[in-house]
Image (cartoon, one colour):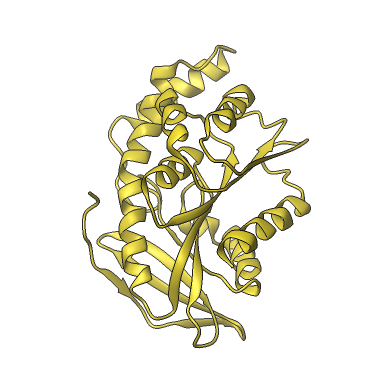
Length: 248
């Protein structure tokens, strides 16, 4: 069971004529909710990101505006160990071990990936679940709920554990522990997975293994040439159509 925490929302700020921004805190976790202007409650898409909420804001707001145009509310929270949040024990050491392996041209050991990713997943997933609790209690938001992007291992576990998640858009751009491959077999919701074929920081074969392991009866893998930040515009359009089908 994830911990029950109160979600405290500040007054809305109008971003433009059709979009409202609400800052909130969940305990000591900062987050942002964006809702289309109007009185009708909107389905919710959770926006993942690699950490550093303030630094990520310019990239997030583009995704937010696209989702709002399709009638969706969107929300995100700061990752554990990022922004002003305290570091996760052992993760800095694991990150150093990762860089040493990459610098030496060696395969990254499984235990390094576990120490780097699993503490983040173990902390972040209950926080996301508590965020869903708080947001669905607001009059501006309703289900169903989708999750889009961010650290793929967080998305996989959340989709596997959280019954309110109805669709998952996953981005294969980070290392994946072997235990997450096993958890992927319990994912049954529709999945749209994006893979940048030439992403130097991503193990392509593990990404393909993860897609194969997903237990969903409806799953799509979209692979495009290019590096991590070279995602073509049409990939975002395809993801938007995916969420419109399953959440709209």
